[in-house]
Length: 214
Length: 214
DNA sequence: GACTCCATACCAACTGATTGGTATGGTCAT
DNA sequence: ATGACCATACCAATCAGTTGGTATGGAGTC
Image (cartoon, rainbow over all chains, first blue to last red; front, side, top):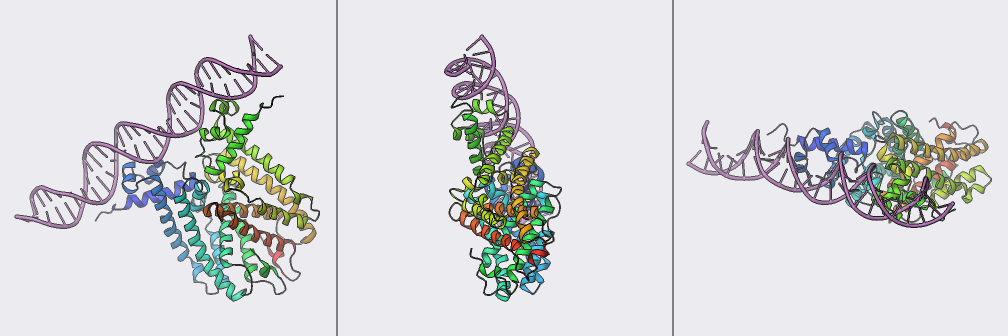
């Protein structure tokens, strides 16, 4: 067994996550990714049959990485579903650390430029986002059942709304740049938190949470 | 005056708006843009000294186009500032028509892939977004002064939040594709509307609108 | 344990196509 | 005839992908 057996493939995928998030899919060249990974194109094409193939595997890699991150995050151990949902949102705010390419979303970045030109990658991104949204929706549904059972809004719908806001927060962050970018994203997520909190704990005489008709 | 005086330049800019929104900045080639515009590269380089220069002018073109669209939109004639803000959000939902490249945002698309590699275009996008956010913020501030004067949230902050949600809605729409994409974006904007409405018309015993601490 | 055999992993150099950008020359209004 | 406008032909650089090859180590045979 080799210490470096499948090391190159993982290094290439890690490099791809970083480079694509920094420059986008089209501008991310194979040479970029290979040089960050510290391997050559020969190795690259040994593991991937094309750039598109690599991107699809990068999406899988991303899904397992982020899936693990959220599955093992501290907020998951909170019992009350409402608190857990809000702690999830807090967690999304807390992980806005480091440079922008470190905390922005691979799927949102790729689908933005490829939705019309690359259906396979677009579908992979759609599925990845839906996968995470479903996890969030599960907690939201549990919280709704307990705190707003009669409300007419759909937990899945709210889950997608959280993802939209977070994706949009990334865009504003990118526009502002590395200094201040994380701050404006956090401000957006703070508003999102307040909205979700209001949906799950509506003041008794308020019709806010009941009246949502998507 | 010539009928064709600056016709080619405008056609090139219009083509650029469409092609860049469809494929992103990097993947949008000069040949793409020229062929959509129906002119040749000779004309292109007569009007623009480089691709970056063209993109910067495209941002200006975009700002004047969208600026005019919102400045003359029916909702601006609504007197009550709260109604006007909510009608603005409704308007954002109403213009989700046609194919995705027709209603998604040039600035959000470009900044997503260029924030680390092209500071000039990034700054132009940031300014364009801030420009529109300021227009929205003005109405939100007027509405706040009338309906939630003691609330601690910042109108500018909320304006940026609206832009983030809309940008994120575009990403979800792109992920879902041309069929259903506009629907999920509209669902997100519906939630946004409800949140902004709650900020501007807080139920008397609710602390929702007052407690926002961004 | 020494041997062949072979799949996996990797590399350096190359290729054809495409890219943004140029050079040059023509057309037309003033 | 001069300058704004635009078309054709072209160029150097760069791109994704190929080529032909080396190095390693494990399986099977004797």
